Image (cartoon, rainbow, N blue to C red; front, side, top):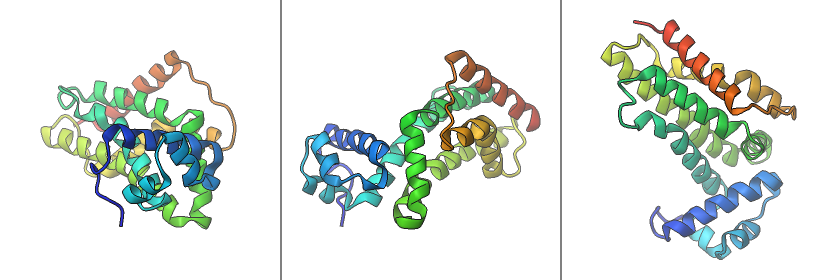
Amino acid sequence: MPRVAGQIDVSKNEAILDAAMEVMAERGLSASLEEIARRAGVSKQTIYNHYGGKAELARAMSERRAHEIGEVLAAPGAIEAPEETLAAYARVLLNAVLNTRGMAIYRMAMLASTTMPDVARAIYEAGPRASRRNLADFLRLENAAGRLSCPDPLEAAEFFGGMVLGRFQTATLMGQPVDLTDAEIERVAVEAATRFMRAYAP
């Protein structure tokens, strides 16, 4: 049984997750816990004790990234300024997903869907699915406040994520380079937020 969070030093835990992201992005499913432990400066047993195996480690990696993406939704004043918050969310989403490491993890999850389905499920549930649910919770609050009209907040969250990432993510997953400048990311983020607000205006 993996230990509950908090039973190892926070900095050691962060080092494990950083190393796991790095090694799995490089080597995919062939990444060994031994190599992850070596780069993190811990023992393999420490990883087993805390996570129990590769699936729970992948889940923890994805949870951390989903939390980082969703932080803008909980920032002071975020609820009162939905358009600005959605644009900020889109910026973070683009920066988190459209990079070499982020796409490598997505590809790994796709391959794992047939060979290691528990790992793929862990990455999906703790990553993309959790991220969309966080956004749906935010939209639910906006709907209740009358600033948006979202009868189905989860569907609306999926629409927004697709609008932001769609064409870029597909190209990147197929190995086509997508090098967006900061200005291009800003334009896409603002445009997506503006169009979304218009579509779900009360």
